[in-house]
Length: 219
Image (cartoon, rainbow, N blue to C red; front, side, top):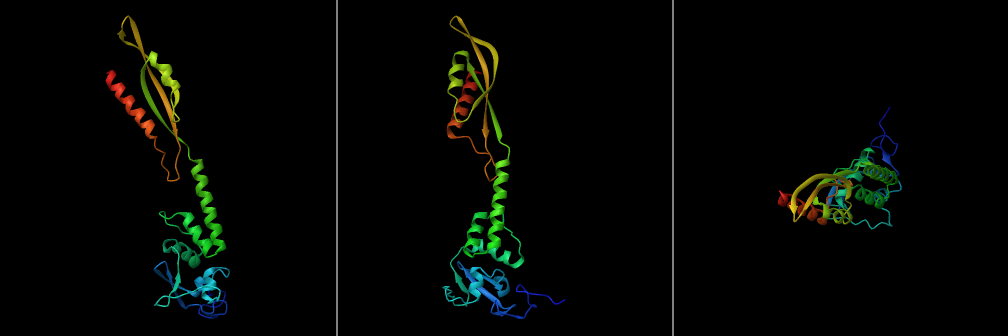
């Protein structure tokens, strides 16, 4: 059986839909970066901007540069995945590219099947992020009995009380023993889309530094 081109005709045969032989090369200048491909590739979606470009649609402002390449004022970084999809029908996005950027280009070029694929990929990515378990950070605070109530009542930034451990009376103040406690508190850190837990706020960091100083000073 003879091989067929993207238009359903034998490879190399003239295609009325594409307006040229299937193997004819087309040069595109996308945002200053040149891409070389075939009319077959660009004509895979008959409703797309690129198909109309190959037809020399009079409604399109299809200027060319000095080399004869069609000028397209779009981001060349995100055009790569679009062109590769037209070449082999698979969505391949490098890890350093945002799916939203590819979606913008797919919508601009009006490639409906690609738009659906990218939207599905974004939904899948977002659902995985929401399902990630939260991480917990624990801190141990040392305080005197008279400071305990105030410390627990003024906790903020998402910290919550977990456990109180008495470590006895370490010294006398006047005629009264000063009982000391270890207070265990925790905070939930939510995972970000990049896979890392969010950092404690500056206020929480300063509280932690102050606590470390107090513990060191009491020693």
